[in-house]
Amino acid sequence: MRIALITPYLAQARNGNAHTAARWARALRAAGHRVHLALEWDGRAVDLMIALHARRSAVSIHRFAEALPDRPLIVVLTGTDLYRDIRSDAAAQAALQLATRLVVLQQRGLAELTPQQQAKTRVVYQSAPPLKPAGRPRRHFDICVAAHLREEKDPLRAAYASGLLPSGSRIRIRHVGQALSADWAAEAEQCAQRFPRWHWLGPLAHGVTRRTIARSHLLVNSSRMEGGATVIIEAVMAGVPVLASRIPGNEGMLGVDYAGYFSLGDGPALAELMYRAETDAEFYAGLQRQCAARRELFEPQREATAVQQLIEEL
Image 1 (cartoon, rainbow, N blue to C red):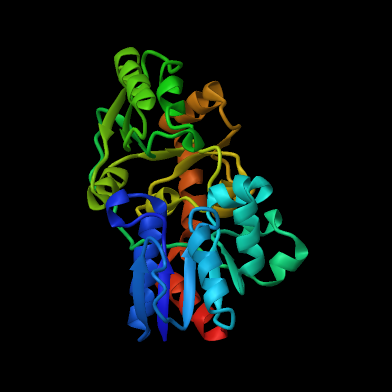
Image 2: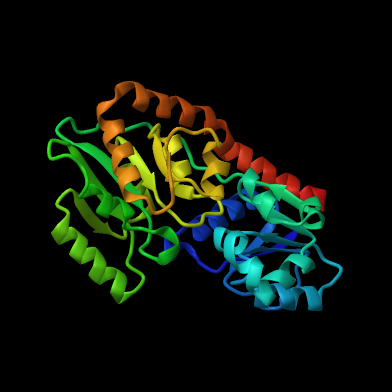
């Protein structure tokens, strides 16, 4: 089958959408399909379109539906789609109506859709290859944050929380991610001066980011909205437990009863959890067990099979 895979970001963006597009393209090609990966649909004849992001890919979605109304159209919903855009953006709302199938990236995403939309929606968890935990330092209790600096990620919450830690704490925070505006860069530089535990590494290659996570004792995801955070998957597949903001997208990844949640934007609660993970071995082991129990959801073969079945269904 000839498939157009439209994504708002290609590999050089080093973000979740770009990684999702690359994995899906590999899975579809392995199943024998011909996949054209692009930022926009160029009008070429294809049998099916997959579009990541209802709002950002709306132009391609509308053009395809108008030009080839009898061909299947799959729209994959991201965090900003589910938890912001489909509530207010007309183009995103129309994309949901045009889609033959919708895809959400974790189970709780279904709750954001109407019963009619849910009926044509499939849940496909993203994946990452297993990665053995690397050697971790004993002098420090290393925490990784992997998030570009933008509003949706509340990216500097761990930096500010680090200023609330007891003086005897061994916590060191390494933040991987690019500042997406001059204001974010300036605030990050200020944080680096104010909070000596927090180190901003800037954007790193995907493989280097994965190894940075694997060498850490803990990962923090403080996002305001997530469709299905890739960094949580990377951590779980490396045996690294997670502390996460209690938002639907994170609950859909880690389970509603996960012990490592803090209220969105609550720096003192995050600081308390970080210090507890450092000093309470039983609590830390419990986080490890809960993350390990979710690991099967994020296996690469599971995702590849789900993507292939989605195509076969149509």
